[in-house]
Length: 471
Image 1 (tube, rainbow, N blue to C red):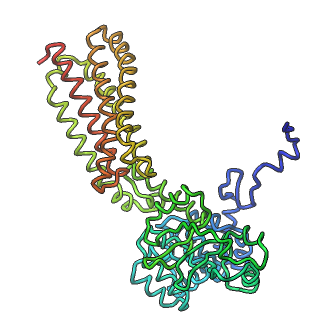
Image 2: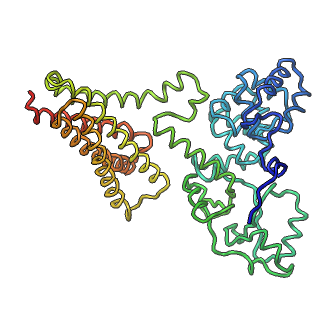
Image 3: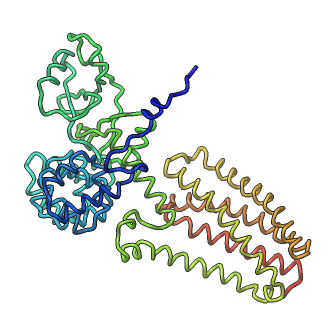
């Protein structure tokens, strides 16, 4: 039976915050102002000492908190001690703005001293002309490695991979392999398995470190390697690569090029970043905005949002035209104008719920030809049942409010029809957009809302006009 923790043990289990973080894990305000004061005073050595313990993520938070001129000053003051990996932790707008203001020679020095995947992440957002100028200043070996990664498509596994890995032949024994690992100086900082390759550098197996260490020195690598190889193409989309990690519970996997040569490895820390990035993009796309808006300028935000706001305007006008068809009806019965937003709002919310579930299922590839009919039936039934539940509730409220049983029946029927339409549109529109190559996360909401508005207004007002004999 577990014993309760005493006060001393409880203190040990609480998260510990460094001097530069407050209790919520945010940059401490007092510490931050001290950094700004050191910047203003030009105290370079004090800055280096104060910022030396920061992790990449904390350094990234500091860069984002500073203004544009302070960021540039900080990088220049830190010089060789500035870790360019921290630029992978900041918004793209901040990163590109800072890189543009730094000399190409300084950027080249910085990216030469960090991991290949981090360097690629920084360089891929820079204009091609500037990127080539920076690469020309990078040492030959690092330049070739970076160019090879940058040649792969954007958001591909090849862009996210590490180019440092350990490849061994199958005819080595365990002793030879361990001796190689002990003597070789140019090894990756961290690795979880070794990659067994043939003379053409094709991947034929893997050997986890724990398995290697448990075997006798004379055992051949070919006898202990796992020959059921899981590999990822360098041109494969990073989101698809993340699903491979999820499906097979991987920590590390080899990446191969179009000739099936092993060219790099993806590790779980890369994939966590990919999952976070893709999830953030999907959430923002549902609202029709871009990730860079948090740190971008006014016009960046305007350009990001104006397109889909324009689409929403067109669809709103369409809904208004439907209402205009029943202007005489509304003039004769004011209660309809009071109740009309309820029908549209409930349908819109139900449609967004179904659409969100569908978009998520599309992004995680949980919808296929075997289950999409079942999902359509399910959302139809969900819409029908919810419609009936809220039809009773709104019908009773309307009947009591306006002392009209007939009005309660009208809004109840309209509620059922609109909730049913919401469920169907919430699943069919994202599926249709996805089939035709459009991003359902970006485009679905405007169309779903339009359908629920149009159907809700038309059914409610049309039924009321017939029921009460209004012109």
